[in-house]
Length: 71
Image (cartoon, rainbow, N blue to C red):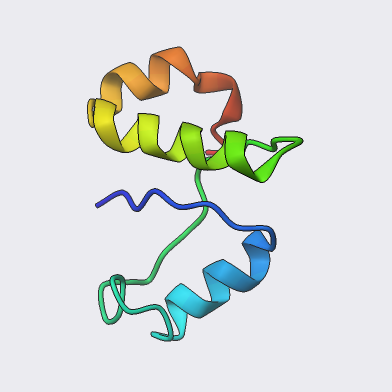
């Protein structure tokens, strides 16, 4: 399962998900960070998150945004 989200503190957000403090992902982990992209403005990051959620096609996302994948 992929979870799409944005955060100003990615490390803390991942810890929240893995310690079951985040509602939607509670008890569905463990989670690992596989994609990271920085934006200058928070609004741009939120728009990109919405775009990924709309696309849903993981193969396309890997191809189109492959340089942002960590693994």
